[in-house]
Length: 430
Ligand code: ATP
Ligand code: MG
Image 1: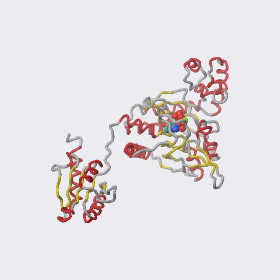
Image 2: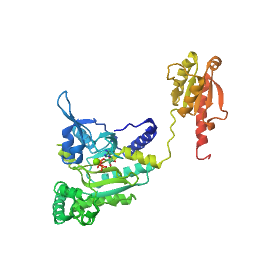
Image 3: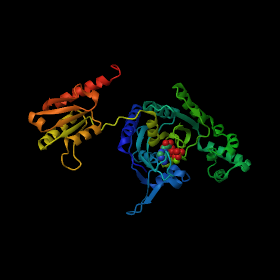
Image 4: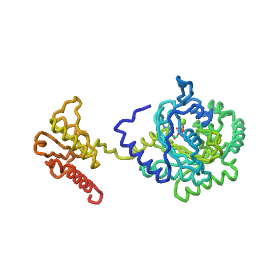
């Protein structure tokens, strides 16, 4: 678990604002579910033999009433619970999104944290391939808006339970025929999770694995048509993708479309977003059959990509830093700071660490360090004259470095300066 420090706040803010506006532009509505849910929800929703449920959950017994609770390792289960509990789909399908911390007790390593953040979308009540394609295109738009270029799409269809069942039987038989080539890991998984053997990184097994029965050859006409429907929309909208027949997802509830967005710039943990269709899940939770599709993206991994791709972000704490000396000036400084905030500026009013005023020099040092464009100085002189001194802290933010301005004219003066400054910074004037 790690702290996200103020130095990184601008990146997080940019990410959060961008993702929020992209989701809004597709008509998705935010849902906020609790971080703590009943443990049974995840055991039922994710499948008892998934990595998450077997060994990654922070589960505990509430000592006050004996409830078995878990810090959510993902949010789809919670969203589906909430949709059912509040009958959210009573008047038709819903496009939902969420953001927040998730918790998994994994081995700490680059790109893998025990508390991490996801943004996800869930389109609940939609059966067709159109919504799968929409979710994928929404992601593509987000990468574009964030300026991330190296994120590629891998796509697959894992069919339905019956198709997977037939494939699984043939796959096990195939691996048994090549038993002498299976490593220890593969032998262990042979009967519990043979699909995962296809994921092996063992070079000695590659050739054998490549020739194994492919799930796609077991899909019936309906599943194939759905898969082709997704691809047709992606092709029509020039969204590049590769079909990866080995792509499977960790959770049991997925069916048909599965996809991952992958970057090569993150080392071993290159998947920034994973998603797919989960038609059976609502039914597994006791609701009536409600097809659905969604994705979840890892915010930390995306922030790392943003950091690598963009220019370092400007990090000024405020527009204006207010320096003052003496009690009368301090009183005026409070009034002025509020007026400036009314006008939409961000203002830091100097407060000394030691509770006393602090020398003029030390205050100016703070003003410089804040990254503000301007310092306003209220000393005894200024107060006596009913004025304020305004000092441009960046060389280009004012013609003359320092000006005396009537106290009541400070807000207008600064707003003018800042609008003028913005014009000066724009592309058209060079
Ligand atoms: P992985 O194969 O990396 O373990 P996963 O299949 O467990 O991923 P999902 O449950 O699909 O991941 O979560 C969606 C996304 O959330 C992942 O693609 C990843 O970007 C991010 N994510 C998952 N687990 C972590 C973690 N422990 N720390 C940081 N990000 C994570
Ligand atoms: Mg995982």
